[in-house]
Amino acid sequence: MTRITRAVIPAAGLGTRFLPMTRSMPKEMLPVGRKPVIQYVVEMAVDAGITECLIITGRGKRAVEDYFDRSDIAENEENARLDALIDRLDIYFVRQKSPRGLWDALRYAEPFASGEPFVVLLGDTFTRPSCLPPLIEAYQRHRVSAIAVQPVPEELLDRYGVVEATPCGRGELRITDLVEKPDPRKAPSNLAVLGAYLLTPSIFPALARTRPGRNGEIQLTDALREAAEAGRLVGVVASGRRYDIGEPMSWLLANIELGLADPKTREAVQGLLEELGAGKGGALLQDRSPLIR
Ligand code: UTP
Image 1: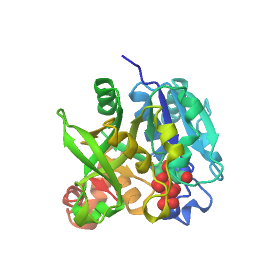
Image 2: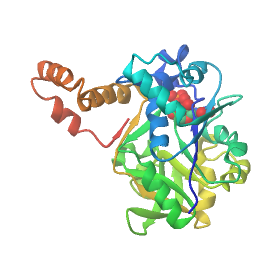
Image 3: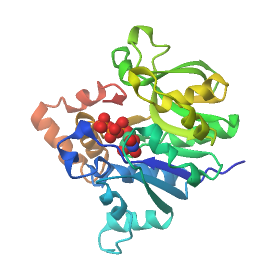
Image 4: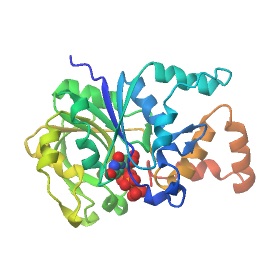
């Protein structure tokens, strides 16, 4: 069994959806509860057995690099926990010369991957529970690239990469095609690409060959289509909640939701919601789609 030990975390994007905050701070450092979003992402990786992380940064992202230095101020419990997390990892950084897109960021990971399969997690997005263990299991079973997908309401499909796929058991799918931001009426399914990937090194030549697709943009989806057409791409239907923190509404809701989940803050947040919404807070959260945008 191949152990998956490497994770690539692209964190060089401009964060235009979160302007003006991102004029002077990386969106990956936005706090969710008591930690920046990128810490949730790194924790997901470490919990799944990752021991080496490559974080792709760029202009204005130095705070991300500084965050993962040890600080050794042990009196603070959360701080000590982060130091312990850092001790379990080798962390590398590479700078993307210009934020041309996720596909371009991933090209910088080729030397790090060293010809082995690796995980990709977006620096501003995490799932709870983690979608990583089923993704790694799918790779071990099929020995091909695996991507996490999740059902999305039809009217939101034009915001995502959407897969054409047939079920192959255990919540897994054989992906035959991917379409970026489809017209919802013509979408091949309601399953959207979530932003967590287990990729084999064959992605690198595919990325080099990829040319602009829809809207004149190059998308990772276009490179993945090559694997899909060759029958070498599986999907894993993720059951957890996805938090895309790069989107202000999603960030706000994630803070409320994690505030309710944290025993240290639950009572205060619950109390505030009840006071403000006359007890409607819980229902409001449950009514939302599993993909927060
Ligand atoms: P996004 O598409 O959410 O990032 O990419 P973005 O371009 O910053 O988003 P806008 O500007 O709000 O629309 C998902 C992840 O990929 C990284 C981002 O930092 C984010 O963590 N990324 C994106 C890169 O590393 N490089 C890029 O060129 C683009």
